[in-house]
Length: 191
Image 1 (tube, rainbow, N blue to C red):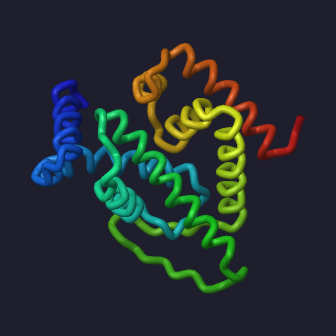
Image 2: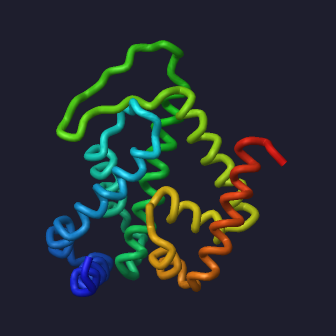
């Protein structure tokens, strides 16, 4: 995305924060494609099949984003950082619902343009375990937790993550490495 489009998104987000609802109509076409790419990255990490679809994930996350009255949008990076968090919450809720359902229950697949996929219980369990470990990491080191959320769930680059958090790229690289190792140990139980 070119610098002009990024600036346009930032201006529209600020206008939306200031109560300009017309900005929302202009914002949708500018962010929709990138939200779809983000959702697709999330779902590619899931083991197929998964009942949640890219389109459904984008729409659900988008509704959560634009419905937030308390958020004072700062810029494009801030918007996509919050989008990553919203998508993570949606996927975790979906995984928890899947795990709470009776084993072997009937699953309905709905085919849309990008196909339906159904999350396995094993994958749902792994996703929930990762989320719980990430919550523990947030208690110990919130910045590392946000880095993981932005990089893993949001698919942001090192540079985008640094910009969203207002820190240097070297810090992101170092903390990303440490956070991944810590999470691996937490999830696998290996020392």
